[in-house]
Length: 153
Image 1 (cartoon, rainbow, N blue to C red):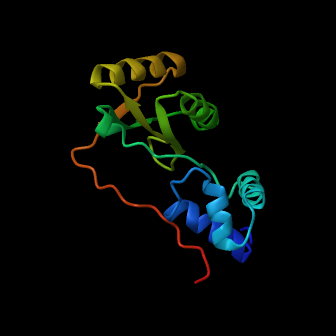
Image 2: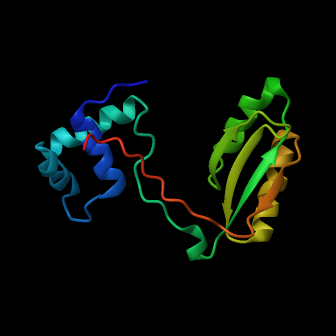
Image 3: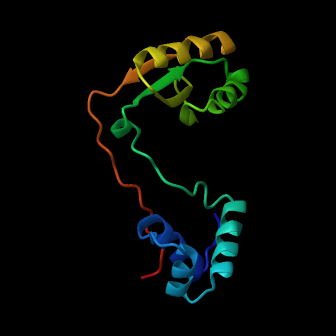
């Protein structure tokens, strides 16, 4: 586990929960914690390099734009599961991909323009991997707001 100094904690809290929508956001963020925009960006880049900051960007509500999403799974041989998971994860329609301790050991989420497109993508994955993906469309979504409170308050 990485130790974060108080400034890094504050920066991570701001970019998760209170990112300023202004023309110079890193100047604004830096001013809140006593850093320049350059110092702020340098710290965030280091956190990204360390793997602490995994993703930095907007999360689009694809359903509001008319896309469909579904949870998918395949059962892969243990000796090939990592390679197959990487093969699936590089597809642009896949937003998340996980290895699980389960009969279906690779789980992934898929976003597509419609249900026929989902079926086509799953057929392509089947041809590429030799496995038969299954998908589990949601009946109702319960969206959680994932903010990790790490700043010293």
